[in-house]
Each structure stands twice: as C-alpha cells, then as structure tokens.
Image 1 (cartoon, helix red, strand yellow):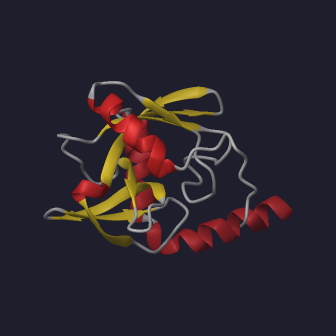
Image 2 (image 1 turned 60 degrees about the vertical axis):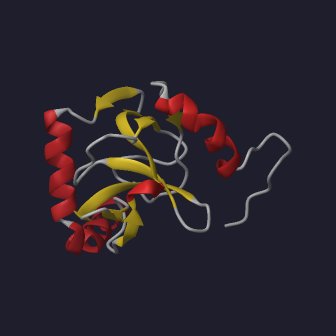
Length: 154
C-alpha cells in the first residue's frame, strides 16, 4: 500500500542511527506499529510497544523484537525459534516463518505493550502463557481467523 510521505517523516535507517546509542545507554524506545502482522496481540495504529536495546540480552522464543531486514525495513515480530546465532521470526497473524535473521540485525526487544490503554508487561505470566499458546497454534491460525470473521458476520 502506498502512503504519501511528508517532509516531517524520517526514514527508519536514519532515526535508528540516532536511537541506537540512546537505547544502548538504557533509554527506551516507544513505537506505534503499523499494519496487521502482530494481530491479535498488537493492533497497528492503536497500540504501542516499548523497547530496550537487545545488545547483550539473552533472547528467547516468544520475545517480540525489532529487527532490520536486508532491504532496510524495520520489523516488529516474535521470535519463533533460534538455531545458534540465527533467529527465525513470526508475525502473530502470519503462518510463515521468516529467517534466518542474524543476531546483529536485532536492534531492540519489547519490554511492555500498551494495548487499549492498558500496560502489559512481557514478563507477565498470563501474557507469556497466551503468547506461547499462540505460537503453538501457528498451523491453524487461518482457521481461527476465518472462524472469528464468520462469527462477527453472524
């Protein structure tokens, strides 16, 4: 989808060169994701993600990270699995796994979300359980989304 860019928009590659030293210095980055790739956990344009530097962090399955693709696109997705120094990512509304993503491409890790105005810590036990169940349900997500759409039309 094409979106008109105005003079006040700074491309991610440019703002990240300024933000990375701040993140590594202990500051947090607040982003409002766009798109639907993290639905149902995050709604693009409404919810917010608060991130800290991924440098030196032990990342694990289920973590939501900000990484940069080879073309410079910055993506916020969940870690599906890890093989050595390679990470495989998955959007919550996707069924296909992206990867491998090199560890050096991972810029930040989410510490908490603000969803519908409510703060949700990534370390929250209920959040961890739900996100792990959602990872396991990857193969049947299309059926879940179709069922949801069907029940909304009824």
